[in-house]
Length: 80
Image (cartoon, rainbow, N blue to C red; front, side, top):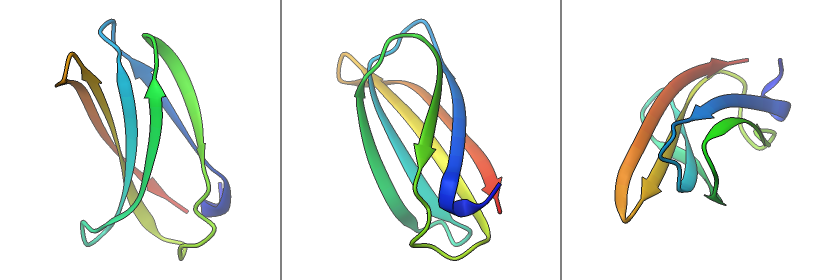
């Protein structure tokens, strides 16, 4: 899979809400933020355009907020 067309699969818990995806490089610097918006519980696949960035290892963090508090957080590694 190339970084230009990266797909991220996630399963949101029963307590879903406002979803944000953050992309970090290997130095821990945030390079991208996608505000997905309100989502229900279930399985989702999100396409992230990584074409502006060099090939390599990146981490993506999925954060779900419900009732103004963090309800779910997941971090995964992705590489090209």
